[in-house]
Length: 350
Image (cartoon, rainbow, N blue to C red; front, side, top):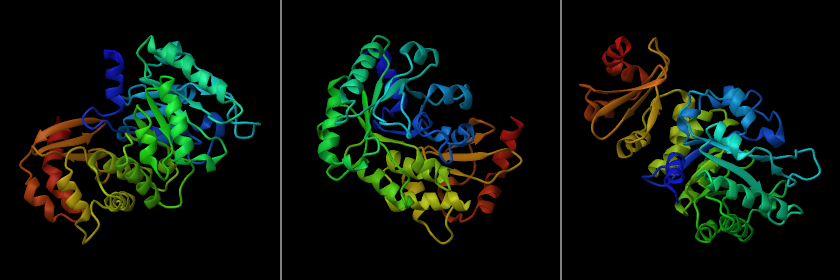
């Protein structure tokens, strides 16, 4: 793999663990203005800092994503059918590699429909896209789509689809979790990220699928509806991140979700989330209340460096705040804000 392609892959799958949390918002290309994605910018903006990549069409990218973002773009380049049409599998390549480069995409992606009437067409789409993308060192994501036939999502079918995608040159494959998923991973020589599919009934189901997939060898997720159609999209993506990057359990992820949704720093009387923070310090973030200093997120690592997200930028400071001992007793935002107030005032003046 050339340096440029390796570098692009390192942006969307963390080099230290080979994993990534991607946010899929490409659904409008066949579903139109689906629920909670009617105004894409409002859905995307709060979640961008929490994903390694955004899977999006060029239209929504141009109209609804801040060009100042540092979040890498995986550009959907296929389409041509809709949910009300005859067959969702009847897709072609709709966006050129030249256009992807113009938009500074880190990778490109399209769907394949193995076993459908349009199997050959969509597999040739993938092969031709790989030929063009390789010339410029662009990774290619192959999505093993099933259209409306959700019952196809078993290990035998998904193993077949993923292996064919890899054989044709896909750099990453997006597929569904299933019983026997470890066999799907074993038979696919490139990284796999899992889709969420239609919105599940409970948050715990999403966390369980994420946890099981990662434990069985998945390199992360590329989820959409199960994040942004939830009542607390931020809670969902933070819970998923904890599983993917911090090896959190489903119980711990659910507690993160409930904490974010309720607006509380910690669930009163519970130390489960606090234990997670102490054990998985790096990369874990939690929201504080809105203050006169602006939206604030705090990150703490094992070198006692406090990283504060303030006014759309990160500020790193060493502080006298007794992080190791003082924070263990904190149970609410008011007390946390009191401890951080001197630091915030200094930062506000900087």
